[in-house]
Length: 607
Image (cartoon, rainbow, N blue to C red):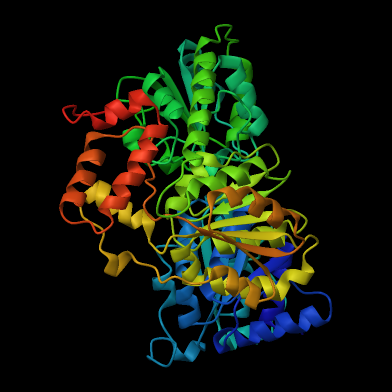
């Protein structure tokens, strides 16, 4: 007779899952034991055990993002379960399906304050679209199936709680019985197409536009051809949210990458100049970088109905997946012969790329230019490469310099913007696509959180990967640089080194201690050779890039608030003010005379 734990494993497999990310403990001991038994028989799941439960959840989230499958993580009762929460919030924030299985003490202990017994259903109620405890063998099937089906349909994490004693009970067979649900391991269809009359309303809005811009997010993954066909038909410009970079190939001339603090000036000009905006699979949250009310007519397409019409007052909100919706919408769109909008966008983009190269080639007196290595890496990205980036200034350099061609992938912790995610993302990507080159770009603060630990996970599983090429680029500036600049530009506060200093560590030396290649980059002119050496090495490489902490992550348009707050922070005694002023001036010079004039014209309300 099979146990509930055996049934859980078999049911997970029936849902198409082949790999889980777990960390053991007595609260989930029966399931751990059965995972081991089935693995020894060659019938089990591939079980990846990183160094921390938080990493398990981030890896499950990343697996879902990179593959489109359900990510699955497993942890023990309260202490392990609580560690999953940050990664599960990442899944919730970025709309990806994850199912977490967490242990619990025995049924008789509920509500008795015994060791490691907590109300896990209440704990996970906010993060999970579905959370349920399996209390009898008879309801295991329905709970597991509902967790997977709901996670897939709602694009959210779900949580299944497994009491220790239930894990070892006989599963039995289900028969028609009152209160017993016999469920199926079959997902609900999410290929949703809006009704024809709504599609025609959307087409009328788009066809009336002369300057149409598509803002494309990660919700459009899998619809690249449809997005490009629609843009070509109506002469639209293309802007991508940061998580949508891979949807639109970088070599499309009227694709101007991101908009916002880490976006491009051509994207901002598109947003400010368009008369029609079409939001495709994006919940872009920065309203100040969307068209002014009344400037542009709007259409939105999304599978998340609660996010339709949320960021901009759109006229038509189409509840559907981007691929199916655009397929149905395309025949209704009129062929636009006037290409002046796209041509203007393409010219501005060409100029911007020259500006980005100029920014990357700057030299700073107090350390390397953090843009330089990203610039050199981008020129050498191999076909099919996967690039992850972390929260912080790393995301600025990733947004400004990394260009993903068709077939490449890239992702990060988006709406949650959690530090340290880049490393588990990269490791999960390598498990999913072990024949591809994976590159993790991460700041030293995030790398110290849990990233350094995950090199141990990489060492443990390296031999199982078809191609061992795995590169970690650490921005070594001994500073929580994004926090430093946010304090200056948003609040007008000087850097407080007591909170923002990062203890310097020999990251390349740590890699060498583990048997990996470590490369130290102390001069900008060595960046290209470092990238080439890392890409040529069939193994793990850590590039320890010593860069200035003062390189400003300049936005595409410098506002009066940005400028004035920075000046205030320097006036209040910012200990890094002299170097930051010099480095900011260097950056402004590279932006061109007109933008420098705007940045320094203190009388303007908005530059």
